[in-house]
Length: 174
Image (tube, rainbow, N blue to C red; front, side, top):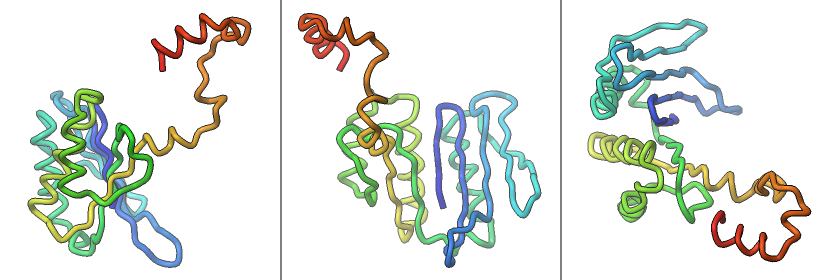
């Protein structure tokens, strides 16, 4: 299973492991915190909508977990991969440990729109379903592997050739 908590949504997907990975279900809670919040589920070429309390992220998470626990396939879930937007120095997926959660809690100021929600989902699932393996998949892993040209600012090379300009940029932008 995968969970991706955004700044105003939570997306999930459930996969079956066979010879090839097969997606069996996807869903998303959108507009969290607004009156028009909605939980949409796509399964077997069918779209359905579920009434859900999503007045804030906490209630949306609790409602999502409650819904998951009512699904007949949920006991088959062995692991959950969580998209973590900001992992600072983390450049590979990692099994979630208490130490990793503590570290992520210490850097929430770097990503206040995502990290607190991502951490809360992990902690609530850990409390309710401690047998589940939870894995943090960091966006920062992707950013370490992109080519240098994609990391470079869109500044003309003649400006960057100036030693003073390059020094200023390195101190203030990087």
